[in-house]
Length: 143
Length: 446
Image (tube, rainbow over all chains, first blue to last red; front, side):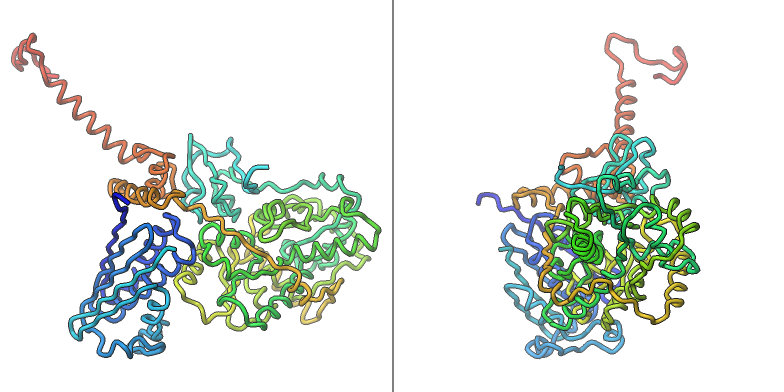
C-alpha cells in the first residue's frame, strides 16, 4: 500500500461532564459505520470508546481520547490525569469498582468498565501511575 | 417492482419545500430538491413521522382501497385493536365487528387474538433463556426497519416471532379454507390498520418470504362507513373473541403486560426509540429482558392513520378494558404457541445505507473530505440547503448530491466576495482614461 489512509480524531474529556458523556463514542461509531466496518465490530469499537469515556469522566481529573482509524483496524488511545489506579490487576476484575455511591446510584461504576474494554478489544494494554494518571491502548481489528 | 416499496408518499402539489419533515425524519431519509421533498427510499422506515409533521399535509400513506375487495370471493377483515379505541366504550366490540360485516366483509378475525398467541409465544421464548439480552420486540415494523437501517448490530436482539397480524391472518386463512371450501386465491385478507409501515410490510415482508395478509386498509379510510353501519347494525352475530390482554396491545405497555415480563422497558415515539437503541448499542441494558419499542407516541393508538385524537383514544380504550374486566375471551382457533415458535423463525437482514463507499479506503477519503467541509459550514443545522443538518449536507456534497453553495450562508459569503471584487475592479481606471477628480467629476467616483 503506497499512501496509507488514516482518520485521526481527538476528544477532550472533562471530569464529571455527564452532559456530553457518550458523544465521543457516538461520533466514532457513526464514522466506522460510514466507512463500512461490520456492524458487530463497529459496536465493539463503540463499547470500548464509551467505557473509556465514562471512566475518564467518572474517575479522573479529565483526559483525552485519540482515535486512529486505519482500513484494517481502529486504535483507541485514552489518557487521563490522576488519580491513577493502585492495583491494575484488581481493577481488571469484574465487579471491582472504586466508584463512590452517588455514581453507582446513577447506574455507573458497576466495575465492568475495564473488563468490558478488554473483552471488546483485540489488544488491550493499560499502564497506570498513582497520582499521575492512566493510559490505555486498545486495538480493534476490522476483520 | 422497484427495490423498495413504500407506503409513505409525497403529494408534490401540496409540498411547499419547507424543511419541517427533513429535520424530523429519524433516519435522515428526506431531502428538498427542486423545491420539493424527496424521500430516499433505501433509508425510509415508513414510521409516518413526516405525515404527522407536515404542516401542508403533503405526505400521505398509500393503503389499499375498499374497492379492492371486489377482486376476492371471500373477504376477511382483521381489525387492529386500535380500531376499537376510535369509538366510545359504550359501543361494544361486538357491535363494531358486526359493523365490519355490514359494510361488506364476510368474516372478522380480531388481531387481538393473534396478539394473545404471540404473547404466549414470547413468554415461552423468554423461558427458554437462549437469547441475546435485551430482547427487542419485532411487532412494530417501523422499529424493525429502524434497526435494519441504522442499528444493524442489534438485529440478533429482535424477537424471531411473527407479528400479531401475521399470526391472525394465518389462522383466518386456514380456517376459511376448510370451513368454506375456498382456495387461497379466493380469499382476501385485509388488515384494518392505523399504520403505514404495516402496509409496506405486507408488500415487502420483514424477516419472512411472504405475508399472509392480502392488503391493508387505513382506519381513516373505513371510519366513515363503519360509523354509519354501527348505527344500524343488529349485533346478533357473535364476532368478538379477544380478551383484554390482546386488546391492550393497542397502547404502549400492553405487549409487555400481556406477556407478563418483569424486567422490561417500554419505549414509544420514534426518536425516543432511537435513543434507547443507541444505549443498547453501547452495551447498556443487558440486565433488561425485554424492550417493547413502538414507533408511534402512545403506541399503535397514536398511529398516523387513526381518526381519534391519541389521548381521547387512550381514554376510550382504558374505559373499554375496565368494562371488560378480567373476563377472558377464548381464542377462536387455538394455536399452539410452541408450534408457532418452532415453525416461525423470522430472519432479519441488515439494510444499512449509511456506508459511504464499497471500498473502505475511498470511504475513508470521503470522511476526510466531509470533515473539511464540516469546518466550513456554519453548524446551524437550519435545513435551508435541503439537507437535514450541516453534517448531512457535508455527506451529500461528498456523495455528489449537493454543492457548498446550497448553504445559504456560504452562498451569501460568495456573493459578498464577488461584490467586493466588483467594487475593487470598478475603482480601477484604464491608462487611457483621465484619473477621477471629485471636484471636476462630482459623484462618488464609481
